[in-house]
Length: 556
Ligand code: SAH
Image 1: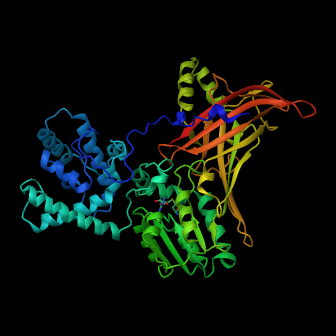
Image 2: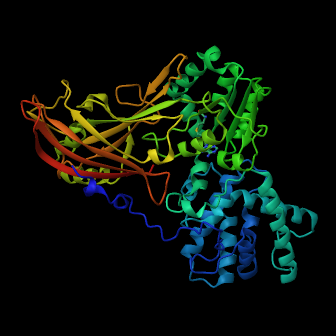
Image 3: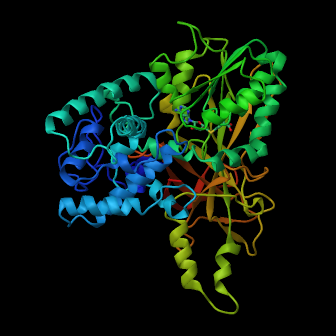
């Protein structure tokens, strides 16, 4: 089979990249100018001052206090609400717009407790650079609050000042900002080397990291006992063989759980890194449980911390073990692994150092979900076929994340790829692999044939460093479900869905491709070039019965 049929990956994503921000420098679109062709500014402070001068709108005055634990989320919600309001009212005169926007935001809360605010975590302006610089907003808000408290003004910096004063103020803010940038590990997108433009287009990191600021996601991960107990068992059962006296880096420590396991296992020094504010709780948890003499918490993106030499490591000091729980849906969704690999290449002790876990594998299997489809044939005696068609239309749009009942699985589970995490390279994370699936004996459904409705993708994780006790866990349908569930690619049962013959050597085979989405590298494009058929008696000649291409993007 040739790969040419699915060479065009971009068609499954469908997003356009016209609005990508320049990699070399940020250009900030003021809040009161929704039209992307309006003037933009090189600094955040200048864009905000433009709003103040032109429209009498001061974003900073609507943000939560910079000391507020929920500043980050509150600021995202406020910016997105303001953007949405401006979009809906762009025909207004600019002063009226500023006044109305002030009134609107005053009437709103940015509280996370307010369910209506959840939708405002979504950027209202594509690639909104202001959302990528929330930490800068926090610094500016801090300075503005300071100004307010040291002057007698009851509002923040609204336009009673002369242009000269404003320029001086902007300069001062920029100086402070530059200083703050050096001191804190920033969430902001770093500019990339020009040579990396193609593969490293900016995605919305702010949106990604803000999801990890939420308690629920950490609770979900901790309560996933298949996952958490596997890490615990792998670390604690290898105290003598791996951890005692070692230096460990925990990348993406979240609540600090893995760092604490490592300290319990006798690690000499553990550095716990996380890019989100949950690290404050990690620090408290570590103190509360008496491990602060071993574990040091550092907030920041691991890549930035390495680049800025902000980790508590001497010049040239390396780490023996990198512990991390970086896995996403279908293993590679979210694409956190490349960040861990950057740390591995920069900091892990050559030859003797190890990633933990150290091996992972991706699998494919096939399922039949006739029950779900047949449901619509007779709902309380009513034929609801149009609903079946509507459901199929929805199910076949993107890849889904669902727990697939093991009873629906009709074939073997075939391995697609194995990664040795100590050595794999970034380019191997986009891969193409052959697969071959055959009906298992237990494949049910009446009749002599069975339709394949879904391809199901899952992964296994191994802690199998030579000389240590091995521990693994699986996210396949045959194992206890984890919070990763399975990634499901639906065929369209009304159009060209593979059919296998029972009792024959009938096979579904093909090539499977997984690739980071060109426009958002945290999403994954998957494509399958498949054919059904069987081999002649002596097993040498393949007789093909049907073939097709399936493309799905895993977006969430
Ligand atoms: N280790 C924790 C949390 C795992 S979730 C546990 O096992 O429960 C992954 C964590 O990695 C999140 O908290 C996220 O904020 C963090 N993270 C993702 N990418 C990161 C990066 N590039 N640098 C630092 N932290 C990162």
